[in-house]
Length: 175
Ligand code: FE
Ligand code: FE
Image (tube, rainbow, N blue to C red; front, side, top):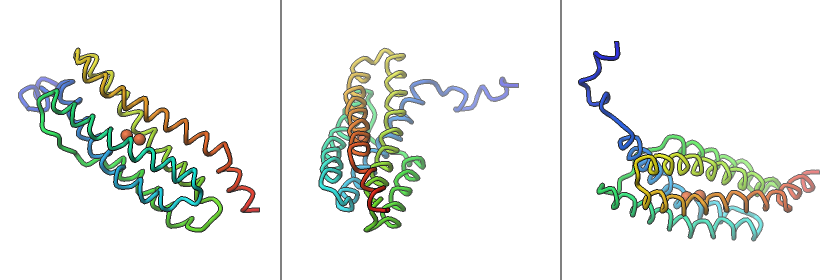
């Protein structure tokens, strides 16, 4: 049955195609995040949450640059491909922003929204690193890994913010 499709272009798609699609997806996602983080930083009530978002915005600029470096290394032009997953995650974050404006739970909601973004990125970078290694592209894997480390550190920093007072403030002020 599978033989009927062997002559189609899709039938010849391999790991390099998957990798390129994933790279475009992430490039779109990182640029979207770059536009979203300043809005989240402005919306946050506490200085520490604002500072965390601002810090990561600067790091995200570097993530975009690294992806462009990866495109260059594999001889492709840097192009994004619409990522409905990140659009959805960011959309949910915007809902928190609107629905909790001025509310005691706003920052806890924003931290949670940001963490969902980080987890998406961590999943995608992890996969791309594994595929790059499988294809013997060590230098590409190293670039992606540098970003992955920053995403993981950000995820941990967000957890510390939540557990270090943001969640508690949401609880106390609501009482
Ligand atoms: Fe990133
Ligand atoms: Fe990130």
